Amino acid sequence: MKQFVVYTRVSTRRQGDSGLGLDAQRRDIQIYLSTYAEVPFEVLGEFQDIDSGRDGSTFGGVADKEGRPEFWKAIELAEKTGATLLVAKLDRISRDVETVAHLLKRKRLSLTVASMPHADKFQLHIYAALAEQEREFISLRTKAALAPLKGTGKLGGNRANIDKANEAARAMADTHAQKVMDTVLPLKESGRTLQQIADTLNRTGVTTARGGKWYPTTVKNVLLRQ
Image (tube, rainbow, N blue to C red; front, side):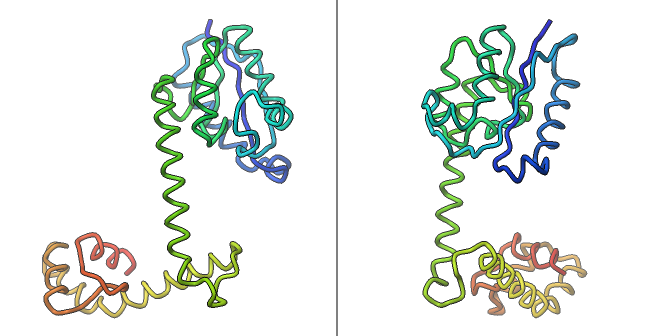
């Protein structure tokens, strides 16, 4: 009989108290068990921590064990019984690729991620590395987007001001879309392709909201805004 040890984690005390995020994890785990698990199966135990994934970047560190005691209890039970440690998503273990790699090297531990039911340890390692690269790029992209606002008083560094900046950008795009719609919509209704519409706008000197050239994707985005 296949045996599992289930582990869930929420990132803050507030999420833990409210159950925010926990229902989604339990849902994904249940989908895996009902769809992909060998029948019959047995869940030996369920463990949950309320902590940040950034705490204790290296497994085996005292701070990490103190911060996430239930995680280590889950590992201990899984390795002791030969059961599979089951988590909803890989980031419920950690967002740090070195931490994930350290875990995957444990020979006595079998790990399954519900959202990637067929992934082996090698594939999980690759996924963790790619996810970390993506997060780094998103961080750089966000900093680059906010850089022009620094020193202008328009951005105070908090989430509310970032949301206001994003809202302003969307409003500007919506306004521009309305201006070009008188040209785009008749072309679309006459059967022109997105590429043909883009070519027409470029030939007539009409620019996008950011002052750039038109492409099929930008034409499509304008039509979707309408």
